[in-house]
Image (spheres, helix red, strand yellow):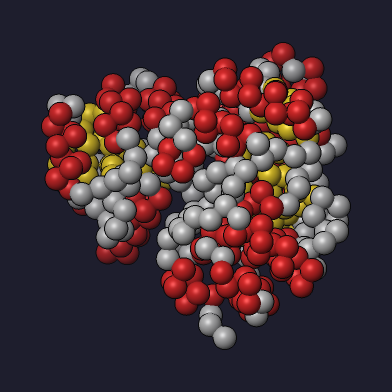
Length: 403
C-alpha cells in the first residue's frame, strides 16, 4: 500500500480536477465503512468555517477557547507551510500540536484501503482524513478550502457555520462578483449561522435570505462594545488584544470566535489564553518582521490600515492568478521598497511580469537578500504560502550560519 507522502505527491494540485459531484459520491460510499454515520453533529460537534479572509485565525482562536474548557479539538486548516501534518492541529489531554505522524499514517492506510476514496482530489482526500481523525474528538473545527456549497468540507452538517469576511478571490472557480462568491459560499450554511464582520452589505443580505429559506438562525456581527453578551469580558478582551499587539482584523476574528464559543455555552478566559499559535497570520515573527499569507485586495487593505503610520520593506511575490497590480496599489502608501523573493513553485508569478507591474506603479524594487536585512528597519513578508515558506527557510539557514 502506498504511503501518505506518495499518495499526496501523485494527487498533485490542491483542488484539481474539479468535480462538484465526486466528493458527495465518495462520501456516501466511505461513510459506513469509516464509521461516520451518527458521529458528526452529535458525538463530535462540527464548527464549519467559510469565507475569504480570516478562516485560519478564527478557527485557531476557537480551538484555543474550546481547549480552555478541556475539550478535545481537531482544527483542520489549509494549506500548510512545511509539512502536511500542520493541517491537523489537535488539543487532547495534555497535548497540543500537529497530529501524531503515526496516527495520521494509520488513518491514511484505513482510508486508502477503500477503493472509492482513491478517486478523491488532494484537498478532498485531506478532508476525509480530517473526518476520520476527528471521530475520536469532541469538536471538529473544519475550515473550508476555496468554496462553500461545492467544497469537500460541506459533505457533513455542522452545528455552527461561521462566515468570515467574504470578498473577491478565486474568481475562476466561484464567480466574478462579490455577490456570486457570497451566494456560492453562503449556500453551504447549516446549524447556527454566524456572520462575521463583513465589508460588503450584499453578503449580509444574501446570508439572511438563505438562512430564512433554510429555517436557520442567523447571527449578524455587532460591535463587541454594544454586545450585551460580552459586557463583562470587554475589558479583558481589549487587554489581551493590546498585550499581543493584535491588528484590528485579528481582534475581529477573536470576537467572532467568542460568538461561536458563547453559542456552545462557553467563554474565553483571556487571563490564561495563550497567544495565537498559527504561522503567517499577521504574525509578529520578530520585533521588526511581520509575516502574512495574504493574496487578495481586502487582505492587503487590512495590512495597509495596520501599518498606517509606518513605511516598510515589502518582501513579496504572489501566485500568477492573483490581482497583483491591485494588491500592490493597495499597499503602496506603506511600502518603502519591494524586495522580490523567488520560489520554485510553478504557480508563482514570472519575474518579468512582476517587475513590469512594479514599474507601472513606479514602486522601487530589488531582489531580496536576507543578508541585507537590518534590525532598524521594518519588514512585511506578504504573499502566498510559498513566499512565507521560502522566507522562513532562508531565515532558518541564515540563523544556522550565525550560530
